[in-house]
Image (cartoon, rainbow, N blue to C red):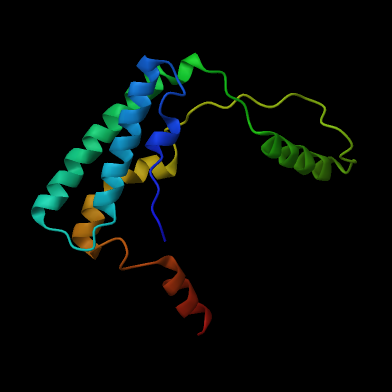
Amino acid sequence: MSKQCAMPIFEGLLPTSHDTIVQTLLFRFAEWHAYAKLRLHTKLTLDSMSRSLTSLTGQLHKFHRQVCNNYDTTELPKERAAQYRHEALKENRTTDALSSSPKKKSFNMRTYKFHTLGDYVQSIKLFGMTDSFTMQIVGASWLSV
């Protein structure tokens, strides 16, 4: 399995001031992710991971403040169609045509995934590397009882 880097794909797509912020954000995510995927941690790697998270969250806030508000973003046509189908089923009507324009979507850091980033270091200290446990194993074992 080959690993690809997203940074070259995004490079130059936005004005220089925004591009620099996005490139730094992508780098900070890659750096933090590399620490999260290490198979062996030491106090030094966990301290580095904590510092990496601090840099990442700072860059996320910078991205949110300085880049996001400059772009009008909406849901994808596929997302809109799925929402329309869901509404049609709820109201027991046909899905002939979309009646409204796509909904505005904005960057949201108030999600569970962002909230739990800060718990990784403590979880690794308590339970070991993040590849050493999975909910699938737990779920599968109780199903066979």
